[in-house]
Structure formats: C-alpha cells, structure tokens
Image (cartoon, rainbow, N blue to C red; front, side, top):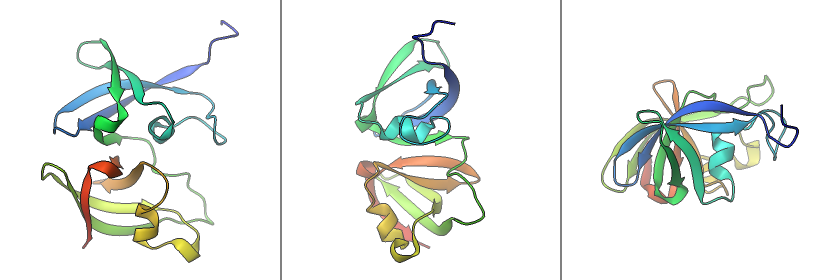
Length: 152
C-alpha cells in the first residue's frame, strides 16, 4: 500500500437535489474521521468545508462532483448517531416541507444536552444538515432547502 494514500471505504447513498431529481452515487469515506474518533461518516463529508462532494454514479460509473448547496436530501443506511446507554436520542414526529412542495415524514432524531434539547434548538444548530428517520432509514436534510418543519 502507498504510505501517502489515505484508505477509503465505498458507501452507497441516494441524493435528492433541489430540483427534485434523484441519483444514486457511491462516495468514499476515510477509515479515520478528521474531527472525531472513529470512521468518517456521510454526515462528516456533507458538513466539511468543501463545496463539492466527489462520487461515482452507480448507474454509469462516471465520476461526478456534486455541489453541496444543490443537495436537498441524502439518504444513507448509516446509523444516525453513535449509540450509547447514557445519551439516548430524542425523537419527534414531523413533516418537513421542502422548496418545490415535496413533503418528508419521519422522526427528528438527535442527542443534545438536556438544557438545549428542544426541536428548535436542534434545528437552529450550526450544522448544515439535520437527521430525519424515514421508515427506519436515515435522511440527512439540507436546512437551506426546508420551508417548514411541522411537529405532528
């Protein structure tokens, strides 16, 4: 193995763009995350300062550079958070209305300190994306493409 090469693992995701189009792509994640212990996750890739995400189109094997600002939702089979017995997630049933009229239904799911654990605290956090659990699958929703989040 080349000592200057960073080991990566292939991860399949589904990307819904702001215009409503959907693509299935593979992205490559580092074995070690740069901002926390453990493996890099799809969320880490989306929250990085880079403007584009490199990937491979799963249908045609072409390389694509996806503009993060054009991504409305990324669906992944990764777990939504690191599970432990001390910090259990809070979950709220919601409808999320995106620009263009599409509505997502699911659970807002997050772990925050008790003194700042309201849904509005989570939505107003510094991350670009928030986690929505749709039928057991993780959807990372880009905040800039959301018109409203309605608690059910």
